[in-house]
Image (cartoon, rainbow, N blue to C red; front, side, top):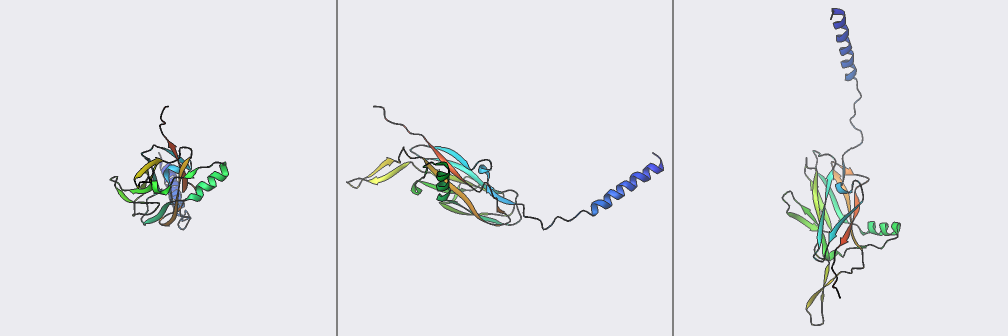
Length: 196
């Protein structure tokens, strides 16, 4: 290479470098970190199997990117989701009776941190998500007979049960994503009938 070519290449790099210094600043744009339920990203429905002894399923509530700020949100049962689903699809699913299931916040070691029908959750800085277990304790109801003894009878086999969940009240370093923030967990029920 001669001096003229070296000088031309140097001048080209200098122009490119100077041009890059003039790029517009992108600060102050829309907040891009969102909170959502990971398993509901492609569909707002999940299914899991239960029998008379119950069953369980899990999903992850998370933010798209870990943040330096705390993020708080609520995961709860929202019966209006199932009412809207039934109206739109002309179906008759019923919310599983509240006394036979719970939402459980699970830590990294698989231990239950808290449980209930509404969980208030905090993600610490740089934490991306939390695992939620839907635990169906039993598909049996307890009743007292005429003698005061407890007897168990199965929930109706003729009813289709579901559990509607919703993520809400997102605050801190994220906002609620417009999709994948709620859904319905449908129960596939296994049962055995006596042969006559």
